[in-house]
Amino acid sequence: MATLPKATPVAESPALRAGMPRLPIVLFGVVVAAIFIGYRTTWAAMVHLWNTSDTYAHGWLIAPVSLWCLFRLRRRLVACTQQPAWTGLLLLGASGACWSLGTLADVQLVQQLGVVALVIGAALLVFGWECCRVAAFPLGFLLFAVPMGHELTPLLVQMTADFVVFAVQATGIPLYREGNSFVIPSGSWSVVSGCSGVRYLMATLTVGVLFAHLNYRSWTRRVAFVGVAILVAIVANWLRAFGIVMIAHFSGMKLALGVDHYIYGWVFFGVVIFILMTIGMMWSDTDPDGGDEQARLLSPTSAGRAKATPTLVAALIGLLLVLAWPWGVAKLGATKSAETLSGGVLMSLVPVDWKPVPSRVVEWSPHFVGEPQRLVLNLESEKERMGLEVIWYPGQTQGSELNHAENRLIHEKDPVWKRLRATTRQNISSPFPPARESMLARRQDGSRLLVWQFEWVGGTFVRDALESKLVTMESLLRGRGNAAAGLVFFTPLDDGEKIGGARARLRSFVPNALPQLGRQFSRAAAP
Image (tube, rainbow, N blue to C red; front, top):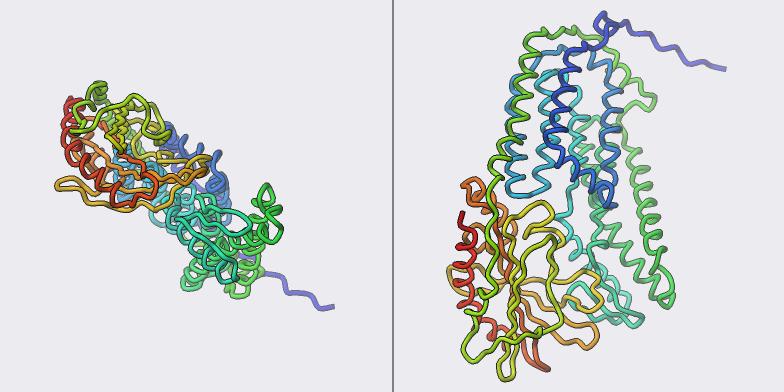
């Protein structure tokens, strides 16, 4: 029987036998410890999302996978010349500034990207360019620990709903659609955030990037595989959602509705990913026996030892820079909260021929997290009703803020109300931004509610969440605090009333109310 030739051993250089110097490792560990301690609230927020969201549960695996990738590169790393890179200070500075701006604007994604980039900057500063070029993938892979992708949820929900409706109609099943909800003869369905497929997308992207790195050397193949993986994840989620509707429909709404709804989804997704990886292996351009990789790992190079003094000085400067950002943000954030609003603020807004009433115009209230102050004004005329709810945040904090992911008009699975229309824009009058308009409907009797929303931050009305964050950051930098208010105007539509009549009713009230409320907010927020 033929035997395979033995691999010729590669001689190790003295640098390989000596191992990596301890001083840079110790100093890097000190700087990273400072990053974890000084930015602990940001790390805690990341861990909280890993623990509570299936979409980001893979975050626990990112650091171990990165360490495993570093272990595979250990011989090349030992052979590298270790010399501090002073340009690492630029990355530390930019990362710290990113975290600071994200903290002032209360954007968790920016904060979390900043702290992970701080770790990468610390590695560049202490170990230098040559080591970081070798370890580029393990260091960059750490960014996947950041919980991101949630911003795509509305778009993915819309795309999924469009596909499912199209596919169901293609089968000949009659369907009636209202927004992201639809009704077929066997039952009613709603495409909510859990159907968006963002968890599949993020998991596929993470695994796809790792798979491409391990199985391809060509950047063209790597990028192509990741692109295909993203497309497959999106389309697979569409097919999964369509399949669930079909299974439930043809089983008389007995299957794919409870636990099996989720089991079917994950099993289907697992099969799709397995097929994707199997096909991807067919185009692998690495040595299946690992010979090519081992040759690169064992190739000895002329390693140089870093001098202790420059490395120590670089680490100390980096340590001071790392700790400076939390201190500065604490100083800027130590601004006095605004005052609470007087209960009589809304009484001056009552239009002519309308009267305030104690009972609610409609049994509904928008959902805002934290502990904001709420003021409610309910109005009636001879045959019409409308109302206003003001949500006032004297001082926004993490979890108690105007632009929070859980702030919404109704819960996705609200048992009483559902959203009929996607949010649109309605121009009011200059200088106020357009109103965000939504139409809600009561599930029991179909009665409708027209809602207009506005946001006030830092002395001005803003158009959207992005502008709100930017104005909040500017207000804090100027020492003006971060008070904010959400305004929700609403009016029920009478039986058979067209939406034009409800809009006209709000137009008669809103343009006069906004400037008065803006002045009251500015007065309460004045330092």
